[in-house]
Image (cartoon, rainbow, N blue to C red; front, side, top):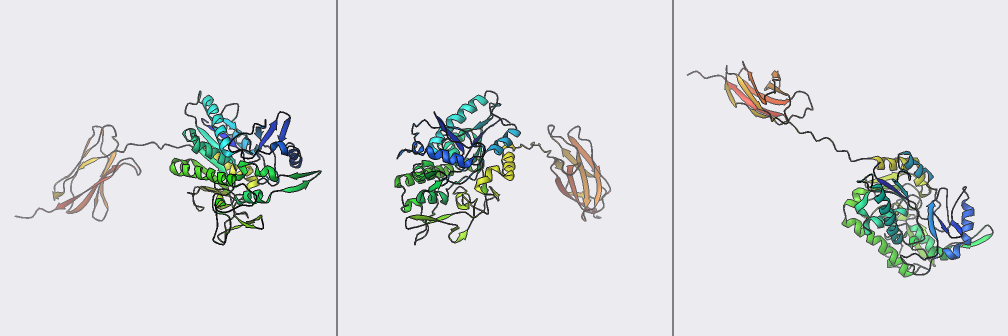
Length: 451
């Protein structure tokens, strides 16, 4: 395994901590307890206005990939952890100890541009070390959900394409998801246990959640579907909406300008699940709608089919791997794990290029009855192989076949006693499929007219 496999989780999929300990972490399958604990950290977790692509300097740092089910109501969707995925990768030879596996937790609150640049620094450090023993090593990215956006930014906008061999995405919202619009516009205020948690301000402070909004036209209007930048979304800052759209446009343009990006990309998508695809805005609220132009195209229950591919990839494309599964469990699905393993372990097989033998054949066009038919064959020394010379009549019946010695490179055969008529002479390999180019000549045998 010569390459570096880099695993990127989705939004919420990285544990976070500050100097006082964990601020977002699930252990022992205590998802609800993690939510309540997070609620106590909301004030310091909320990002300052106009944070842009920067880090707030709040001391909060990513630590590890989430192992168990994790959910933060109003922020994306419940998600299973990454234990099965990382276990599968280790089972096929990719481990941290060998230096060919890099798990990349990131602060999922922040802009995907920021995390894409940080990804680049980590990948280049790990690749530099691996190349001490594997000089041809490149990066293979395995990305779940928003992790695919982070990787795409690094690959297309930070020079990462130079060191990338493959990009594998699992449920990545290439063009965004309507669910993000619903969550940002409607907000979330709920009483959970002893705490009343209001996640609305926190959610609206996150550049990353805005960057999950659709790039495609998704907002209903009397004149058809509009893009998020072509209308006003209640409660959302126009600057953040426009910045999110610019993020998608920049990646899309870069990928379109670099055709090699398409051949390196392997998209695994969830299918056949009811999924919000467009949005209806009324009375300051966003209502999700499953249809797109009147058609239910489904999705993975979070990322709609419309948003699951690059703009230059059609929904019926043969490059998409479709799995009947929901977004929550895609990275945990056995069929998805099998597909990921197959993509990673596949190699570009170079079929042995066999140099064919090309006989040079000399046969007369015309013979008189009683004359021998001479067949002369020249063979190049470097590609000399055994040949068969076959003479057939006009009905295709075999008259005679010989396999003379080719040791000298000059092969001569004489076929006597041919009756008047037309004949074919074919020089070919001894067996079907032999790498000898078959050469066929024709000869006419005539009676000698009386004088």
